[in-house]
Amino acid sequence: MSRKLLITNVSLIDNSGQNRSRIYQACALYEDSRMIEVQLEAADSDSILNSIYTARVKNVVANLNAAFVEFSKGRICYLPLEDLKSPIFTKKISQKLIAAGDELAVQITKEAMKAKEAVATTNLCFPGEYLVLTSSNRTIGVSSKISGEKKKYIQEFAKKLLADADFGIILRTNAVNASEDAIRTEFFQLKEEYERLKKHAASSTIYTCLYKERPFYYKMLMDTDKSVLNEVVTDNPQIFETLKESASNTYSVRLYKDEMLSLAKLYNIAGQLENALKPRIWLKSGANIVIQPTEALTVIDVNSSKNTAKKNKQLNHYKINLEAAKEIAAQLRLRNLSGIIIVDFIDLYDDALNESLLSEFRVFLKQDPVPVQLVDITKLGLVELTRKKQKKPLTEQLRG
Figure 1 (cartoon, helix red, strand yellow):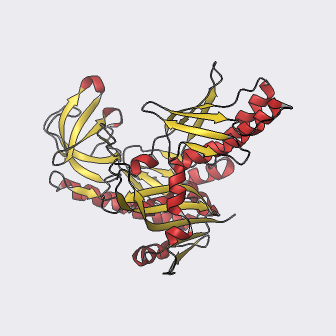
Figure 2 (cartoon, one colour; figure 1 turned 180 degrees about the vertical axis):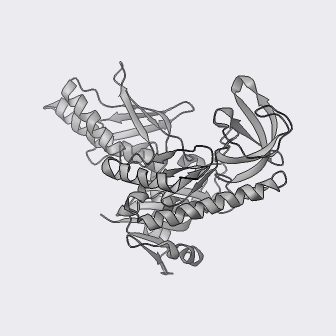
């Protein structure tokens, strides 16, 4: 099984309702010929996600336990006060924990979506390939994919690194296969970056961008499990020059040069994205699933459709549900659906078959790098999931 990360431009119809074509930069993870994860960014957009600004508090709303801060002229974000630990103030006007007029460093954790403001935090994060430095959360976090003796070993190593530090770190999945020297080197690089920002912040003026997030494709590469990545392919010479320095023994970086057939067309990126936006997905068995995102949750319905069996219907329905469960897990990741997800599988009246289905479904969901929790089957026979919100869903990405 071959896994490749493709970085290229693709022309797509956006979701603005004006039927207009825009150029998007696509970073897509492929497993053989199938796209399993994708991130898009309009070529003419300027993302603020994970960037750090000197912001001014506009007002504090006690009943929301939050403040609204202006990080750029006329641009407001929502700052929950529950994580207001060790904030970096650049101007303090009162003895209160936080007050209107205070100026402090905030990092954008969620971009504005529809009618909702962007969300910010004072717990500044600096991501690397093996670990993430956190300014306020001064503990040692470890990826849930690292366990057992490896987890204990890497925690002990991290304690030594953090002996005199005023910050915390999160050890990422890629750290488990990295050498101590590689982790140590990155630790001191991130520490230097953090200390440089604090020094810069002390003399900065309001609305200063203290830290600009790396290009989104670079972040997706860092988030990808390198132990199963074979190759990064791009047709952009500048991106190739930037990324080839980061190549390791586990994967290579290649510049695609065929002028007769573009990289986007070779891997049918536009076609696979078009399919990922359709509500109905047909399965090999003739059954299908229908995915309907709503404002509050996402509803997924499993239908037997063309797959009919006169004998042993329950076993046949179990097989359809199993096939659907695998595809649903893949679609959640590809479409980047999050929040509450309700799945209406075909009814099974055998408890053993239901237990087997849920067990297999959990295995499929564990392949997702974003945390997914299978809650249970409700009294109405619906399977309830929750998937952590991290990035915009695919439909939102196409709005630029």
